[in-house]
Image 1: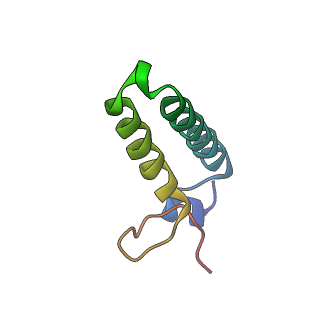
Image 2 (image 1 turned 90 degrees about the vertical axis):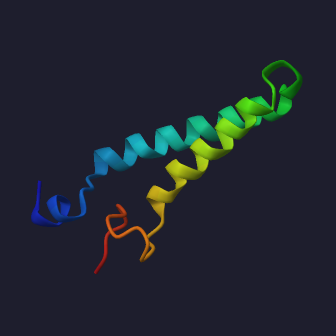
Length: 72
């Protein structure tokens, strides 16, 4: 692990895991919206919020100083 990875808390493997989790919650949102009569609006809200939280990891904002996007 290099010093940049230690400072920013990001490695390629962690990015891959985060991408898998984001993809899962995107799939979960599609399924929950399609079958909202079976799962209910609570599960749709959960899928939206989880997808939002995991998607923030791909964005570098001043409000999120330890975002995994590398800075040059």
